[in-house]
Image 1 (cartoon, rainbow, N blue to C red):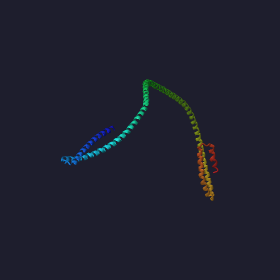
Image 2: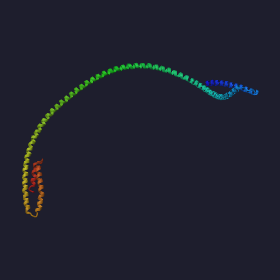
Image 3: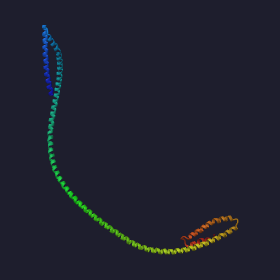
Image 4: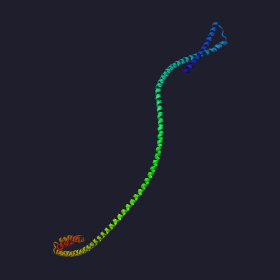
Length: 299
């Protein structure tokens, strides 16, 4: 704004000088022209040429004057706008200064508070630094104690491992002794069982001998029963021959009796074979002698 004011002042001074100069020249020329026209003085050609040359300069000067006036009005409007803006800026500056003063008044206690807090924080940091150094020393001491404890723990672990190895060897020896005792017990039991087996073997041999004697007796009985069965078969054959002779004497029942004899002969042969098989089974001797012998006379 101050620069605009200085520029406006310079332009106004130049404008006034130019306007006064042009106005002086115009007045001089107009006075000369009026004097010449009033007295009828013949204007020399040089003066006429100069006047003719000055006329366009006068037109240019008038146009420059108009331009200067327009520029002066524009500068005046700008000056007014600048003054208005200067007033607004001055009011804003006043408001900002008041706000700054208010902020400054508000910041003073806050600065005091923060300074006190900073001093408290500084003291706290100092105290914590001291405590941290003390804790660091304590950690170093604890680290040394931990290393010593780890060494003692490694020594204890090695002793424990050595003791476990001794216990394993002792337990292995106990297991070996237990296995040997078990083996000895098994050997003793096997000797006892061997003696028992020898006694049982002797009893089984005696039982085998008695069974062999009984088998020989049963074979003798079986031979006798087989001879009896052979005799019974012979008697059956004789009875069948007699029956066939009797049937031949009866011609009207020949076919019927033949069919009956044919149907009875397989049943009789089956009963005989069944009786023969029963002689070799576990039936008593009385049952073998009573079965076929009681039926042969009836057949």
